[in-house]
Length: 629
Image 1 (spheres, rainbow, N blue to C red):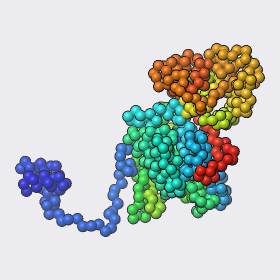
Image 2 (image 1 turned 90 degrees about the vertical axis):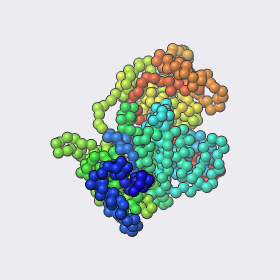
Image 3 (image 1 turned 90 degrees about the horizontal axis):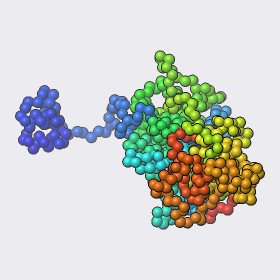
Image 4 (image 1 turned 135 degrees about the vertical axis):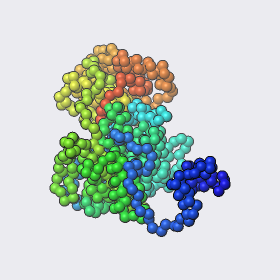
């Protein structure tokens, strides 16, 4: 062979680097090299393979290739869902606990609000909302509620950055059943989001509506679709393409659902989770519901689907360094059918929600034929060391769809943390709330007062009560989006705040245009209107001032993008100039982004009220009254 032949064979892979170097330099290659060279020269062409090749030896590489998951995994920092007869996860858990004694009962088969929608909340016209596919409307609602549950629709959202520093870098990955309304939507004008579209455009359009700047992907159909979308979201997180990822799923199957472990009829469900690297989530003070340790996804090819599912289980366990004996719970499409029916693309979501709730409660749901839930004993290794509870979520492949396997682990346990990381102020806290309309603002104020600030709270006036108030006020400033209809109130404790918010929601407004906790506060406000900073923001303590900025025009009193403005607002927060901050807030200034008091644990709060209205048909929205939710 001349040099050209040697280089050609090296380029084609017939010669190794050592063999080619030896031939080019005239050196004598070793015996192994000479044997390979002879084999390469006389080997006949490969024959076509008519049978599947034998299975390869198991490796510990993560499914799908790419860099491995970090040792501590990825945190589920928020989850939200609606299923048949269960508008929320508390109701879902109650239904699942009773599932063993309730099998065979027909349910509505529809998550609450499937035919209703709050178009105004999301900046859409009723006509555009009527053109949207029902699955898209449901996804839009639960993605927003999941972000709010995580405290990530306001200033905190800007801290979720990609590797290049881009803020609001949240990926959107969705799974859905076939869409039916995509063909009737008109094209949007300019940069406005479209009202409907093909399934592949869902992540892009949802990202536009929510102003999220991460990657996205859509997985259509199949029981494993949600788990596939979750697997893809983790790949984007590993690559640094986003700082967090929303993974949602919706499945709408016609007909009522029959809860039966061996054969569900139609069923519906919608929900989402928010994922972050566990280390980042713990550093930020996020709530961690469970940890994703490993995922595996693959099509079975011509292999039996049971063999494909077993293969993925081995891959996921190997990637996490866990043995099968270390897994105490296995959720599959069969176990889910007892609770939700056949939820289509949301099947994997329902299975994952069941697993996460069992990890959270330390309770195993009734098995098929079982009578009740039982405590989940904590596992130990051979030396007696306590181990975390673990669960797998798996959906076997169906015709034309892949199989998926996810390994979950309960979050690391740590000691109790203080409600707030800063001293509680006896002079009061400035609480800011906003919504798209006055009706939304009143409904959200009532929801907050009823669920977080009960009238008979025993901690009112105590140091713990003031610390709770400080944490609540800060969470509303950092965790909620800024909208046009706003209120501001300074309160000394949670009881005073609750009374003021209830008065505002009830429309009990005094002659000064302020909703107050009682007549004495109004009298104090009239005596000391415009009082001292921090003591009488919005009037007397416990009184509410509000503003409707929907018709406001112009740049406002301050230009928020100027660094001098941010420095000025930060100085007001440090000096606790609460009255000045309240006035600026009501004048249209976003004072929340300049709050520089430092990081603090996320305080879970009720989501904003949605005022859903029935949508009759495209172009003809219903005029029925709204249903708060």
